[in-house]
Image (cartoon, rainbow, N blue to C red):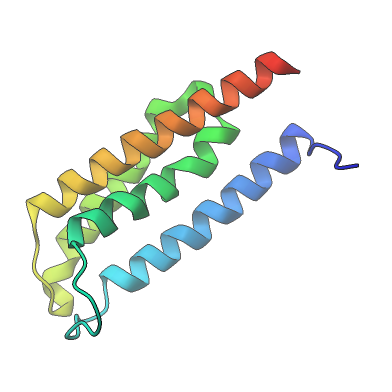
Amino acid sequence: MIYPLSPQRAARWAWIATFLLAALLGALTLTPSVPSVGPATNDKVQHFIGFALLAAPLGVAYPRRILAVIFAAVLFGAMIELVQPFVGREREGADLIADTLGAVFGGTLARVWALRRARVR
C-alpha cells in the first residue's frame, strides 16, 4: 500500500524537484551552444516543455498560489534571457514567450490535478 505524503513532505519534495529542474534548465540554457547532433528539434518546444515541468511541482504543492508560481518561473526565464548574451548565446523574445506559455500550461495543469485530487479525498 502506498501512503500519501504529508503536505509538508510533499511541499519539501516539490521545492527539491523545482530546484533541480531550475538547475538543469540553467545549465542547458546558459552553456555555450554547440551544433546539434541527430534529428532537428524545435527550440521553442524545448522551452515550453522545460518551463511546464518547472512550474508543475510547486503548482501541485501550492495550487492556490499558482499565479506566484507561474510568475516566478517566468521571471527565471527572463533572467536567463538577460544573461545569455554574456555566455555566447542569443537573447530571444520568442524563447521567453515559449517559457511563459509552458509555465502557464504546466502550472495550470498541476493546479487542476491537485485541486481535483483534494476533492477526491
